[in-house]
Every structure is written in structure tokens, then in C-alpha cells.
Image (cartoon, rainbow, N blue to C red; front, side, top):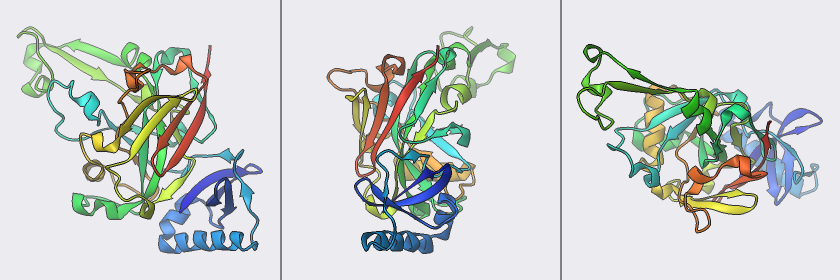
Length: 318
């Protein structure tokens, strides 16, 4: 089943896809309420679909709908950084565990909406990824049970402004040696005993600015995805594919990422985790997403096998 949220006459409305570009409204307060209701919520959506097919409910044409993110009220959006073997082979030392960054719900935007890039963002790249959405409260759930806490999957374009990340949100401190410890240098190559630089990078403006968490259009229920660790992901700019990759290329599998997330954060119904970017380039775009600067294009898309295709225009502010 595929579910979504659109505005109808300005009001957020939960919908279920009937077929193609047609859907039916589901009588729930919002997507979070449907998720919390569990099987009862899914049964309600299934009845709405059946009634629409029987002509007992009006059908909605969503081909030009006013889309929102599937769950616009997500309390947390977590991303797993650098979780792709195409990127990780360049690491000085392999990651010990998944590394996370966060986005607020104010960063969310929907299918068909503009992604706004400010001049100070500088070079800004797309990161196409699937998203797993939690079905219920999860805290300290073991890895072999964590998928029982997943409601379904959607798509995101994890927009990343490397320009502001490295130009304004990074700092190197040449620290006094007596204030450093082995943990400061174990993760990177150190260039002699006098190299006491500590590096700090902050991700809020580069990852979580308004519109930098495009999601949707559909939230696909878990039963329709057989293996989240074997999904083909494609990214496009102006209709041209710039990367084609797979979740099979993740350094940490989906289960490990979700498990690690719920060790540190209490995951609530409707919370979102995207587990790693697609990065592998194409013949015309050999650098993949890291060499694709959105300011050069008018639109960008994310396609994930079985989940659909997310389209956004690009609004380059001057």
C-alpha cells in the first residue's frame, strides 16, 4: 500500500493510492495518527481504497497535487553519514559505527516543491536515499528485532551544501598538546608530533536548512519491500541520470543503522531515518552525486526501486 499527504483546499489530507495517479482520502487526523493506529489504520486505508474502486468514494487525481512530506510532523529525521562503500574506501580508518546527523521538520518539503539554495550555501549537491519510517516507540531494541518497528519506506533527497559546510561551518583548532588525547587523532592521519589540529564540522546549515529534506511522494508499507539492503537507487538532474547505486553498497546494513539509532535516540512513531546516499556515478557523470552541483540545473529527482520517484525544482537565490 502507498500512502501520502497532500493539501486539499489548504488542508493537509492523508491519501492512499488507488492506482496510477489516483488516490482516495483516508479519514484520519494525519499520517502520524494512521501510523500509531497500526493494523487498524492500515485496514481503514484499505477500506477506503476498496470503496473508491467500487465508486462509493470520490477519487482524487494527484498528478498535479499539492504534496507535503508523507509525515510532515516527524519528531526526528536522522541521516547516516558516509554510509556508502564508494565513499568509505577513501577513509583513513574504517568507521566504528554509523555516524548520524539530524534534520528538523522545518527542513521537510514535498514532491514537486522547490529546493531553495541560498548564495551562502555555495556548492550544493543532491543525495538520493530511501527512508525508513518507524511504526512505534523504539529504544534499545536489538538489531535482530529492529525491523519489527518499521512501518514503511519513502524517498528523500538529502540536500547537502558543502560550500557552507567547509567555508563557514568548519574550524581547525591548533590545540595545546597537553589538552589533546589519543582519541583526537586516532581517526585521522597525523602529520608529525606538532600536528595538534582538532577539526570540527557542524552540519545544521549544510544539511538541515529549509527545503533540504525533500520527501515523498509516497510512503510505501513495509510488506511491499522484500529486502531493504538490495534496492536500486538512481539520481537525476534535468532528466539525466547522474548516479546509479544500490543499498547493497552500504557500509553498514539498514538493520545496523536503525539499531544504532535507537540506542542513542528514542525513536517515535513516524520518525524517519535515511541510511546512506547513493554515490556511484554514470558514464557522463563519473563523479556521481559529489560532482553534481545543483546550481547548474533546474530540477532534480530521486528514484528508488519499488518506492517511486521524487521530483523537485531548484530555486537558486541570487
